[in-house]
Length: 72
Ligand SMILES: [Zn+2]
Image 1 (cartoon, protein in one colour):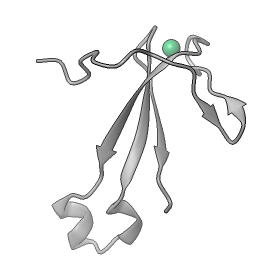
Image 2 (cartoon, rainbow, N blue to C red; image 1 turned 180 degrees about the vertical axis):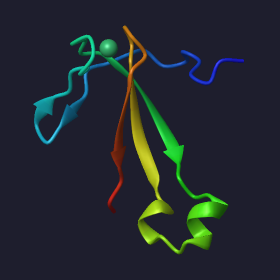
Image 3 (cartoon, rainbow, N blue to C red; image 1 turned 180 degrees about the horizontal axis):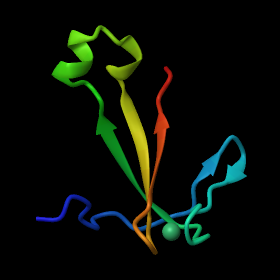
Image 4 (spheres, rainbow, N blue to C red; image 1 turned 90 degrees about the vertical axis):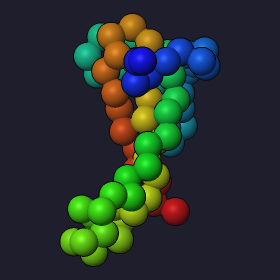
């Protein structure tokens, strides 16, 4: 089973009003994933910001992953 199965179509992503492009291949379509960062290790170290979810955008061309931590 693939970690990133393609159930959603790749789409353009805007961050702070700017179009996201892959910093490896320059492609501009990504598959969105949410990653839960709430792990035992982070909890033990009492790192509050780590108990969040992160937005992951997987480049549809080269599979490079760009992470954005949800600060809310
Ligand atoms: Zn790429």
